Length: 78
Figure: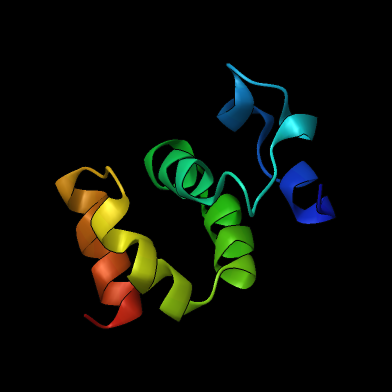
């Protein structure tokens, strides 16, 4: 696991072991979790790891509420 995942808020991992989350294998889950429950600092870490192009590619697959989707679209300039 990459170290940046350890820096995310522990509350994001209330139902799983944080040390077992692989940011590449669980990317969709991790993005959804940060977008729904994360703090600003979590978003900054996520943004530093995943490129805008990666987020754009994953956007159609993400299960986001309207506000989170709108925020992500604005960030990606869609």
